[in-house]
Length: 357
Ligand SMILES: Nc1ncnc2c1ncn2[C@@H]1O[C@H](COP(=O)(O)OP(=O)(O)O)[C@@H](O)[C@H]1O
Ligand SMILES: [Mg+2]
Image (cartoon, rainbow, N blue to C red; front, side, top):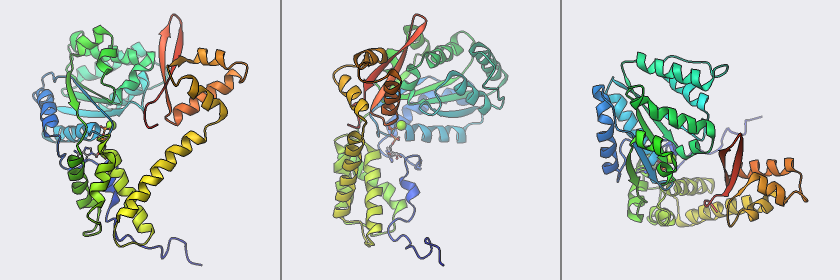
């Protein structure tokens, strides 16, 4: 019997869709020239073995913060032997020892994650940097995650002391959708970091069109799109100015067109892609459990702590059930949980997310 994958049709629209993936870093980043040169200005001292300026990058989702930073880091490493850059996504790694383990590992002196106290880990980290002739640059993407736990708040404090207290040269770049990130830091940390702020603005419809055209050049065969397709994808996301949404819609439309055996992406395929996006959002909200829906309703006007939620709903559900529901809502990206140290315990504040609903 033949294999089901055999004879399955080959692509006639998408030449290489990887150029449309979110983690692809293009060779140039149109409309971010100014931001790139500001970053270069801050980081250039590291190439001469001096202290770079720390940077805080803020801007709404899809404004090119991650891709622009990765682009600049690649260029920096290519240009200079005196610096090494490490990118950390704080959604993925968000503990004190996890981050320092990654950092020391990257610098060539791995430390064990378990069995050491935070103080010991920090001491070793300082020793590793002292030992090195290079100026490391660390990027913390989605850095608002670091404010959610006491453990990672301590990490921010320790990082901020490296320069003043230990006289070590290190560049720190924080990236966040939350423009308040810096003001949420303790005064002491903020003032030692002394970060230059670079704001990424939303893309206009015209800019989104250009970005899409550029990415489409590499990912599609030629002449595989109706003329309206790119303008429509751009217009769809222009409201939020989000290049991720624009690119994603184009990729979805292409896949739909290929599935229908069409030779071209047509406006009707883009419309189908919009429809699919709506259905997915609707399904997430519709398929919440009863306790998840109730929790969401409780926090719809203002945030509540987990204990408040347990108390209000204790006649209906066991605490264990509610705790699980909160965890599930976070996984579904509907809420966020923020930890605060309060005396000896930790309180968890549950907050509804604005996007994507
Ligand atoms: N100026 C640009 N040129 C080309 N692609 C871009 C540009 N800005 C953003 N993108 C693309 O849009 C998507 C979202 O960008 P990203 O940097 O992840 O946004 P953010 O980190 O601000 O949420 C990625 O696929 C990225 O490659
Ligand atoms: Mg990003």
